[in-house]
Length: 395
Image 1 (cartoon, one colour):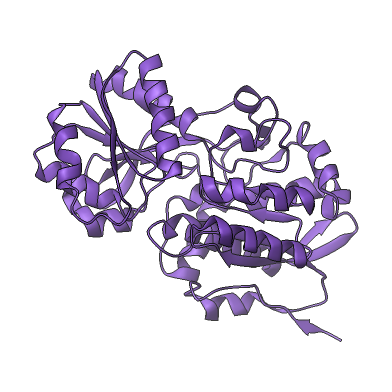
Image 2 (tube, rainbow, N blue to C red):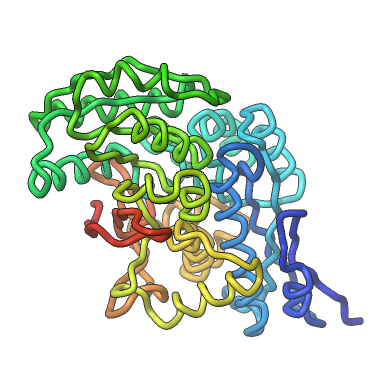
């Protein structure tokens, strides 16, 4: 008997009609890959980009006949869970993955959630790919988490050094939401700035995430006359409000963040005032993008009606999972086999031109390979879109 297999989607999946066309009659067994992350609230853009990237790539692979691992060809099913940026819900999501027999999960998107799910992941044999920066998640004895992007303590120094060398930045100020993730990123940024010889003129101003008037928050920061204002760990929803307030207060210096942003949200919330805003972008530029990356962007856009530059990074986690499973099929049900493969793993990178490879990195930052290798692309927002400022690599 043939059965009909549908990719898991949520109400966020605008292109449901399109995804069902990829859910063809099939006889392949199903390989479930989970996503636990934020797809609602101020930080929703981060998780939506994750989930949509996974669904787009899974639909594409299934359309091509599935993924062959060992002697078996699988259809890939994405199992999503919105943790609403709540650590308790993240735990519930990871527990659901364990109950469903899912061994590989992408997310969570924030520090608290990634730390909260660690016991569940370790007790239930789950490898997870957080977009969160606490080093203790990736350093021994921890071994089940793999950083899915470039961390702020890797990107921050690169951004500051670039701006020192090219824009004459000498004084820097930091502003952060009064939450553990942004505060942690602020502290890392302050440390990196001081190590580079920058003068930190403000590093204690915070705001509540539900703030609507940022003028009293930013006024003392602007009065400290920084050359660079760093919005540490800023969410896509808060970024345009902070930028607008800073510019309306007369600040003419540079503004940056080490978190990824959404060009549409910036355009709608700050317009031309966001021009020059610097942020970490997706792991691709027009010069780096392969034909496969361009096709991914096209498929994503057709499926959801829009595209988020951050998905240039978010496309990678699923690819790393599947390619590592191909390298060691025993890892399908045994994450220890997955771990043993990581140190020597190498596969062609389908999303970059040339002979780029998928490899695990992180030895310098974590003492073990617990990070996917993706380019560090730093963007500058200009007239409604991101332009590449510079590209670097992380060991």
